[in-house]
Length: 186
Image (cartoon, rainbow, N blue to C red; front, side):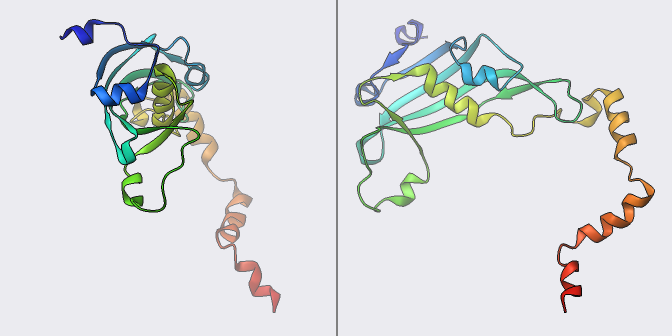
């Protein structure tokens, strides 16, 4: 491991300076201050690991590429038990000052490859950038990979309560076609 990797990761940094010098950051980042992440999960590890490279991107904006690795616990939507979720988002972000505007429509195809992340134009808080990427990587519907891993009591309850009642079956057939009511409009 090089000396650069042995230093603790900066809390705040100048993305323009980092891109100009082609810096690389690798190491752990504390999740203690990632309040939005903590609000969306049951628990998270105290540290996430990040490996980030800085270079010049589209229109000279700083480009941050790399990967973040984290493990969080979420609530399974099938059985309501906890499920371990590994997050490994690949990062490709152009960092620009919130006041900057992109020139014209030229290069629109290039902007599709990267997300933009705004900052105050001076420094950027590393944990905010990492937290944003982890939030985007969270599954919309967290669940165990296989239903056999779910709480079997809950699976049995869902199966028993999912069966339609006698009168419910006929109304379900009518509800399947939302345009059926238009037949009587003549």
